[in-house]
Length: 106
Image (cartoon, rainbow, N blue to C red; front, side, top):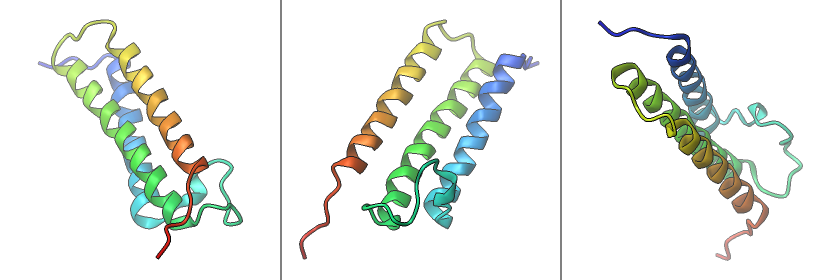
């Protein structure tokens, strides 16, 4: 039987919440979930919706997968450090893309 420790439940719960939030940002356009973003920003809302939604979805799915892996197997202890580093790099990538965004010439 699968034993769900509090650590595993934490990974699964956070993964589910982030995946749902990412889907709401990307699909439904709920950019109000993003701290510090408003409609007066120089980057248009559909661009932020796409970029930030994708990032939050990626992070949520990765955390959910780690939770599933931890509930089924006994992964190495450094896995959480690697996931943390991947999350930081993904957020830094998002910030870079949003700060260097320029409109496409048509």
